[in-house]
Image 1 (tube, rainbow, N blue to C red):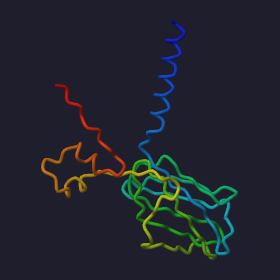
Image 2: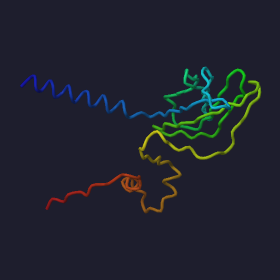
Image 3: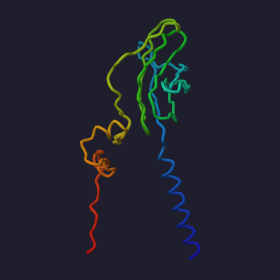
Image 4: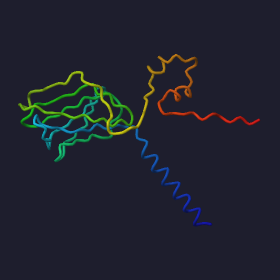
Length: 171
């Protein structure tokens, strides 16, 4: 009996630890850096800067030209990629939400590092890494809803993939 209880609480503990690790309030920006011919560039410097706080999160590409900058708090960012022998590229206006995993690839043109290319506009970022569906409910989202009372439960029903189970009445 004592061994069974110990196993039960051990399993419960590991399940809670595992689920708490999966709930991260941060996001990740990653991608591949290539040259004009399509070959990957290793050792390129990647700098992710938060537009509001100016905090910098450095990174570097590996041998396959892949970079990953993890544990980024939600906010608006710009990504700067540079390497000796190539022009520096800056991609501004990247909105990162909680648990986002954005893939942003760069093609560095040949030139001096002092030459800077800033990417304006472009297609909106689409997460091709995961089929997960998420919705960020912020102040503007709530204020623009045509709801009477703006109930929290009603907001949950607007999120894609959410099904609210009907309450059982006991009579």
